[in-house]
Amino acid sequence: MTNIAGIDLELWELRTGSTVMDLGAASGVIAEQLAKEGFQVKGVEYDHKLVADWQSQPHHKNVEIVQGDGRHLPYQENEFDAAIALEVLEHIPDTEQVLAELARVIKSGGKLVIGVPTAWSERIFYKLNPDFAKQADHCHVFTKDFLTKSLEQAGFRVYSSRGENSEYTWLWFGLAMGRVPFHFTGKTYRESWWEKVYWKGFKLLEVLGWRRLVEKIGNQLWPRSLYLYAKKI
Image 1 (cartoon, helix red, strand yellow):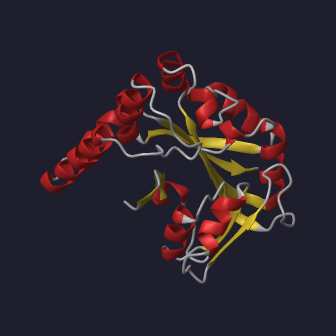
Image 2 (cartoon, rainbow, N blue to C red):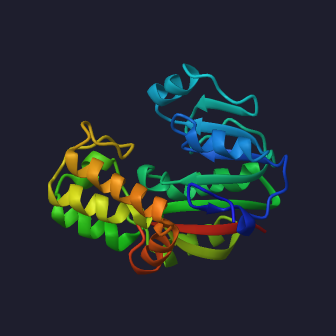
């Protein structure tokens, strides 16, 4: 199974060469990975500094990232076979407008993957660190039911949901407990010894061949993110 940033490509069922839009592309890491799988990728990122970071690096010929706003996408109607918006919607006030724009640019029958922080992990972290929402620049906490209904109202049918990114759950639990300052992209301003030890632990699990199993169990018990797979009707 090929997995990119938590996206199950088999479940997504896109043909090689499909056009994909990455909303909230940041500095293009996920867009580049998708391009290497044979997709034609265009990304939109609101933060001009992140776009500048991408432009300063050598990039894949099948990736184009521009500065833009998810509420006013710079694309034509029915331009894309699919789109992703991972850890993005919680940052944008106007959820309905963003989903309407995604529906506008995705072809009929096209696929959409939405990824947001799980509601209960957000609420726990907010209690542990009163500044968490402000530092993360989050203005929403989404439940599965609310997001599913919002997607249906925008013209999509949700056909699968997954818990993902459990490898980040305990990391963020520790950072919230310690009230460690971080950037809205999710990076701490200075990597602590605790973070280094944490990721070395996952490297060890990978060497032992246990990482995938640990993450799979974690995604069932306490996922950091909720992924919804939807099809435009």
